Length: 173
Image 1 (cartoon, helix red, strand yellow):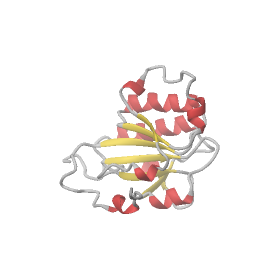
Image 2: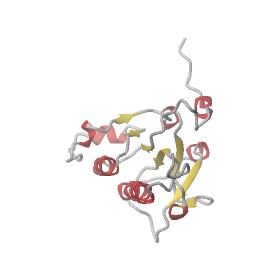
Image 3: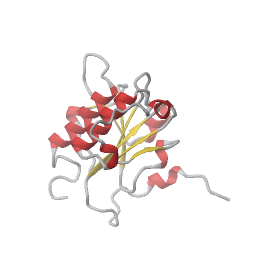
């Protein structure tokens, strides 16, 4: 009988000595709606060196036949549909919700984990409280209004790149 994936897998030590010392970022999208946004997110993933992009839901699947990944980034970076983003947390990776909510930390003041799964809500909604509670960190981008999903992904990945060695382990990782 198959076993149900457990949240316990995500509780293993995040700094295991068996985990590669490589820094990386993955992207998680919660039920994205727009194929143009997913295409732009794939392009951002390529520009900023994200390792993979995961998404939940079926709305994107119904619309993905529209060609939006004009750089063909999907040939180098996997775009994977999964039923629950909590099932794909790579070992040593820190889940980070990106959401404008009470208690979130401002992105300019945030020190990125060495290995992160950045999780973004849909264009027409927010991340569930369940996902936010599961994430170790919740960050927001200080703006005067809501940002487009693809623009939000670009800003977070750029912030990570711009801060360079300013990650939790520092430059001697």
